[in-house]
Length: 117
Picture (spheres, helix red, strand yellow):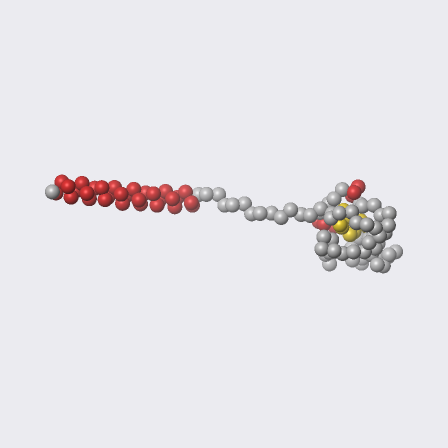
């Protein structure tokens, strides 16, 4: 009987060691997995029009105005960096729209980026 008991103990020991090995492997693999990449939000591009409050206090984009940057949509950051605004007292020089608006317009809707102050 001692032979049977030692065989049973050996089998139990093998199962224990195998289980422990599986846990160690699982922990090791999870420790070296890559972090998931952060989701980045895509910046919205707009059609930009010149706004001149000195000659047009309402800030209206006049009828017949053509979009700046050759009519190519650009982000707000790009537009602010390249607006050519010389009047530093003016609130902003450009107004952006997701789609080309009917002109003239003074509208600020949910798709129009508000000027940073």
